[in-house]
Image (spheres, rainbow, N blue to C red):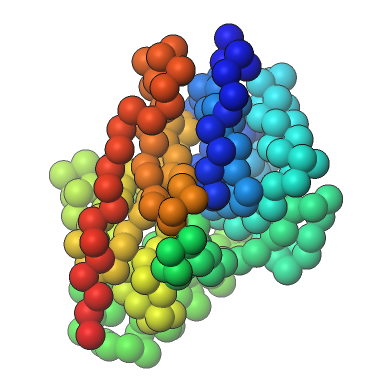
Length: 271
Ligand SMILES: [Mn+2]
């Protein structure tokens, strides 16, 4: 069905939070999406394979294999694939800097769009502690920010060594529903400020399973969302325009993949 029409070719494809290896992963719609889009460069922005879940019980149906095969086929056909591990696939962080079977593993990346905008591409879990303790860190200043980033990384390495599960900001925020909106905007604000710190025009991240594209915090904030709940992805067209795509049954059926077009708000660069 979906194979009957040519995939739409885009310059770049950004996907995150697929959580392959869990029952939550919507592999069917994801496969349909991957058939509908082809890209020169593909960024996998973390939590692609859920290592934490796999450890406590193997769940790997054929559909999950199909997704992996589809991605590898794109690489064989010439696509550049950059895999930026997240907290659920952090076992891959040991291989950062390595190229495995044509797949580049990186901690984060700097992507330059066709129109010359520079984007920091990063999963985002690195900021969990910073976001959670934002008030204290603001009071304590710059050193506290760097310290919190350090603690965040090392605390989770320690938890992994102790065989504990990853402490997840997004899961925690969801439990505290009335605060969730607060956490989302704080996360967005920190990611935006990190982009500014690295002198980028914006950030493209994942982690909190909340797709978004705006310039509310001075630089462009782009979150690819996830393939557990929302089935969203971000594409860059050949003119450098970024688009957030929400893949629905209707999109797949209509053969017109671009349902929801959210123009990137012109980022107000803070001088
Ligand atoms: Mn994550």
